[in-house]
Image 1 (cartoon, helix red, strand yellow):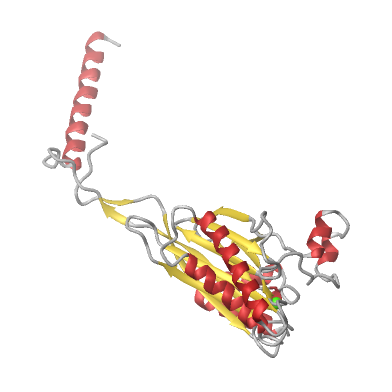
Image 2 (spheres, helix red, strand yellow):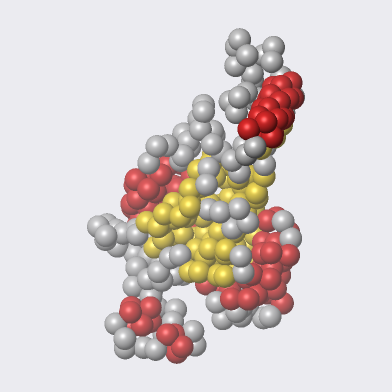
Amino acid sequence: MSERVDRATAVALPETLAVAVAAATDVGGRPSNEDAVLALALPAAPGQPPAFLLAVADGMGGHADGEVASALAVDTLRQAFSGEAGTDPALTLKQAFRKANEAVWARGAESADGGRMGTTLTAAVLKGRYATVASVGDSRAYLLRNRGLTQVTKDHTLVAEQVAQGVVKPADARNHPQRNILTHALGTRAKLDTRLPPVYELTLLPGDRLLLCSDGFFDVLEDRDYADALLAAPAADAVRALVALATGRGATDNVSAVVAEAVPTRVPTALPVPAGRAGFPVAAAVAVAAILLLALIAAVLVLGGFVGL
Ligand code: CA
């Protein structure tokens, strides 16, 4: 009987996630914005969950070269995913980073500075509840779960390496005078180091926020600031509030943020009644069972009384 379901019964399917994404960037304390951002819904393959491509790139170089480098890296990434998220986002991300490195390197060789442009790139592919993150440089991905902020990516900076080696204390890294010196970037060498980019895999839970951001935030925001801003409003408003908070605190650099919010949702659905069983509603079955049970109890009581149990 437990297999039978009345046609009108609403059933909550296992919790599914809807994902909202948004991006914001601001020139901050610089004369021009060398950051580039991307928050893009990818074409959904038949039968596949919705997918998104997110990215933050922070360019560097003389004149307008930083802007060129970051835009080129993001465009190369976008083209690599123009089909769809694919079956192996990690592999597509790795290939895209190599192409972006080559594209920025080639453009740098044509520039007046002779190849001195470069860019960070932190990117994420969201597919259903799974997020695949890759990063080169010091733009970061953070996971906000409940109110806890965790840095997903490792910084490719001299100071981060020195912290890992125990040479610099973690507490001293934030204000270290050499904190902005990168050990890896895209476009500064002809070929990207074969170990790059590192790839991080996450499973999103309802209410999680995945934040990608450039380093313009790091000097002016504390962990609780990210949490406060991201939890106060839906993704589109939250990401603008986060950038406004950093500029309001006097960020001296460009500030860019991309957010994906895993919005919990339940989908009520009426299950179809299996063929051949539709004529026997659950309520009737319960009533019949109850009557039979009462009759059995009554019979036991009568029998018990009769035999003196
Ligand atoms: Ca920057």
